[in-house]
Amino acid sequence: DLYVDRIARYGGCSTSTLAVALLYLRRLKVLLTPSNLQRLFAVAVLEAVKMWDDVHYPNMHWAAIAGISVEEVNLLEGAFLELMNWKMFVTKEEYDTWSATIF
Image (tube, rainbow, N blue to C red; front, side, top):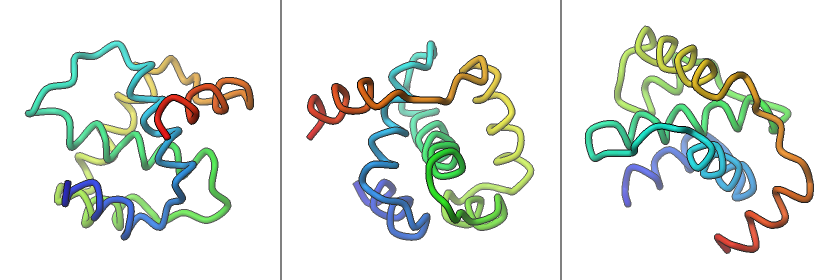
């Protein structure tokens, strides 16, 4: 998908960070639909990058990549973290099991 490629390329994230983002979406107790998938994917990657990468872009950059306003990115980020109960940590065992499933 071109959207996923754009997020990965311009977000400067690694394959492992994308895997964590997909794990976050799996943990999320929200039905993924065509109308929310792109936004939820973008914010999941944003949160994975902030949690796991040493360097990350500001939300303004992510807004430009995702094609939404920085205000919406900020709102989505807050809502996402609340839906995740702020539980963003992934153990090595959980990551290894998950990455073996998706790769």
